[in-house]
Image (cartoon, rainbow over all chains, first blue to last red; front, side):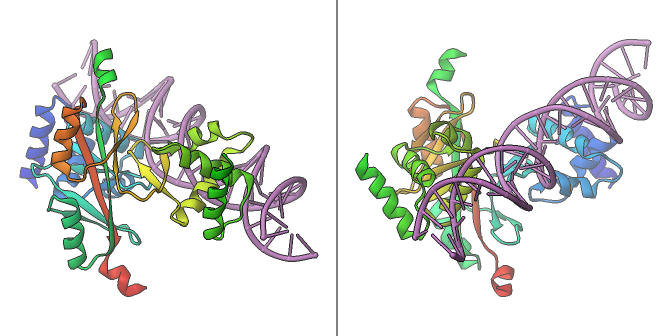
Length: 138
Length: 138
DNA sequence: GTTTTTGCAAATTGTTTGCAGACCA
DNA sequence: TGGTCTGCAAACAATTTGCAAAAAC
């Protein structure tokens, strides 16, 4: 516990973010539990803290690349501690439970997930970049 | 024009959806213009029709697999006519312009998109399925 | 003529903003 | 002490819902 708090402090310090109790609590929650969490899920696990603060903190964390925002197309932003290894997620279309997917090629992954017991697997893949026009403007 | 309307009528009939002017107009707009469009974009191109109706129509269309919902993580749902060929999209992080991506392997695709002039290409890939627990409940 | 769809207004939900007081450096 | 962070309330924006009138079958 002490070690985890120290770890959070280090991360915040490294990013030049001030080290408040709330920020520590949020960051620690995200570090100790893997998988993306909604603002409400984070809020429920942090004692005495306003939802607004959670919004503001995770936004700051995202800005400093400490956490990553995930989007599953249900209008709910979810945030995940950005560990060192690249992975994707699978969400159950019914219960919304999220699990981690380690593999990294699309069609093959779908097959593997089906072998693991998921039914009707599909995926959403979107790319983001900066287009030529915007590069020239900048 | 007449042909397109006939085509829309056929699609609606096939899905057992009643064939109203508004539905025809929305479907036709989506069929004639490729790429995903937001509710507002659709609404702007349809004459004399309420936004609510657009929401309701595209939802129905989605339910009947006539259109597909796309999500780029900006809290705006976009809908695209579901043609026969599988593809993905790339959105400029700055101007939000969306283009179609034909290739289908992630890391390779990023490289190809960079060669085409996009900068800082990244992607979001999420899977959806029905988990074992939910299969058993059903 | 019955059912479905539409338009309008109001409600809902996730998220953001403004401001005064509390906390951190 | 000076600047940043937090809590609260109010604002916002995308989407949904309720209901009566209009259109489709």
